Image (cartoon, rainbow, N blue to C red):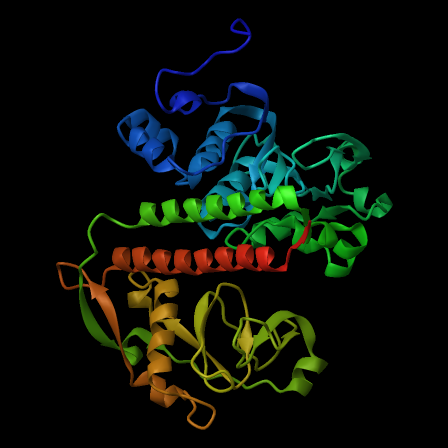
Amino acid sequence: FNESFTLKTNSILGTLSDTVVNEYDLILTNPPYVTSGSSNLKEEIKKDGELVNYFKVNAMGVEGLFMEWIIRALKPNGKAFIVVPDGILDRGDQKYLRKFILDECFLDGIISLPENTFFTTNKKTYIICLTKKTGKKEIQQTPVFSYLVSEIGESRDVYRFDIEENDLIEATELFNLFKGNKQSFAKFNHNKRCKSLEVSFFENNINDNWTIDKCWTNEELLELGIVKQIKEVKFNDFPLLLDDLILTIEELKEEINNLLSTNEEIFETKEYKLSDLFDFPSIKGLTKTFIKNNSGNIPVYGGRQDEVPIGYIAENLKDVKYFENCLGWNREGSVGYVFYHQHKFTTNDHHRPLLIKDEFKNVLDPNYIKIKLQELLFKQGFRWSKTASKEKVQKLKIELPINERNNISLEIQNRLSERAQKIEEIKRKIQEKGNYLINVKVII
């Protein structure tokens, strides 16, 4: 055993202490993904200038550090097959890692594994399949293989008995067929567990998540038995669900600790009139009939509480004003809600765009402004009978953090918006886990 493997004991970093670049043709691994202690690893990395320059992505958790190491260690055209936890795919703070993956690699496939695939671990996991690019300028044109595994050839309980059902065999066969003809695979694939996804799905969802399961409808998941299987557990396995909840909370707690300094952040603020910071362009309010008669791919936003378009219209229509990468607030409808639209869009009269003036584009964080502006509008008591009109909103003042030179501080805004996003993500994660435990059926 010792002649075949090297035990890394030179530091607490283990393999991560080796700054390997372009060395391996193939990496097969299941890196650790318990984030407890990841802050200690990052502190150790900070002590070494070479390691600081090596780990540049700011990925979260132990698994994030290993993903970066794996990609850097692969040779150009080298391949990696890695079992990763769901956090790499669905956590907002892993967006930098997901971007790094697409910048450095071709994404060949993602395979969804069922819970309890690994003994005593209820964590949801995936197999991610990568090929290292020969250069960052290479653009992926081929689709991405995806497959939902329900059974793995052994019972996923404490006993781990061999069973006949094993979707991994079929997944392997289909993946090999996919590799032979990626562009045409979707035409002859009729397997309901398998889909060929456009790479644009992953490009467009870097900031959101890469959870491939959402590409199947609830009806499809029900037909495959996946919806049912996650709602029934045996009594002996129920403690594993509690362990998973505890592990999730510990992970989320550590992420918060990584964001917070030891002391409460203290900073000065200054009031700014919204009309001094933003342009309030006039719009052409689009009617339902107009949207219906000019359908296309550009979202039209109205006064909804969530960022769901009221319809889609075609590009480059005469007299229609289009906007991109800017804020928008609800004038009517669900009055006061603010959104940061990072794509091309237009609106009806219930939703109005808000453009950062050129002189402030480098000092305002749209995500922070979204939070503070929504708080401000809610405090005004706007409602259906008291609309948040452009004339009223222009006159409002917003408090922004300033630095020691009495200038608007983008750095503080970035930190505060990151905290706010992390809090929302933590609440969502805990709600998902809580709902799962409440709705699960325990077979006694």
